[in-house]
Length: 342
Ligand code: DAH
Image (cartoon, rainbow, N blue to C red):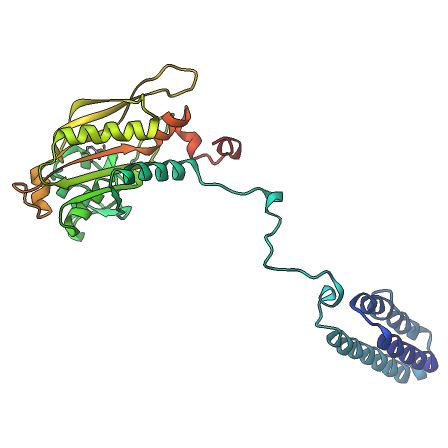
């Protein structure tokens, strides 16, 4: 047995010395140190050794095993680390693109795309882009938009309040904004006229979800403040936008309406086909009007010198009109079969 162990040690070290690459090294490891390798077999032979020789033979067997294991590690690092492929595998250029075509490239969500298209159409008319927070306060969502304390639009049932609006001890309640009109206020508070911006973003309302309603959706707000801005400017801007986005045949219509922050106010409709197989029909897109002088004053803009218009409409509605999408829920279900078609 002792002789067999000496033999194992010598042949093992010799063969290890001639293992020239990672593949040969791995073969050696399997042959000697593997689960059914020679070292394991030698240790298994211990049970047949006479009892009085067992301690000596056992110690020698362990010594051989340790030597071979250590020699293996030395050889492994000499051949280039412990990665089997590192020494002999194919060269990999990590700067090459991966196999993207195999998994498919992603793309922008349809809402993101429509938002960018809208911003682009307005940019061509000279509008910049503004943003505001989705977690808003009473001041920007209501007060400075001329929506007073007891106004029904502030009902808790119609808004996602973060603080309890009935608890006056914490100051004005915070909420998820219910309209992007908040951004008008933020811009007017911080910039001097002339101002010409659009503000796309998410808004939140606890509406019952159905084919045309969602508790979260997107609006794009517009604001133009300058000297001598009139309702005619508003209408021509909206028409220009409609034609820029939907093509030269697009039609728009303004219907008298009411919003606390504009005077006069109007509802803004566009004639579009909701489905390719249907004739175009009038779709209500949002509201607009001349910015109420009281709003200008609250933002420290002199209404004697400056006037302006504002508008706000739903991006989902527009996307549904442009792409013939019949149900708003399709936009948020993230069903790839749907998203891939757009
Ligand atoms: N904020 C209004 C809404 O969510 C839409 C709107 C109406 C925006 C009139 C405006 C406006 O800027 O002038 O229903």
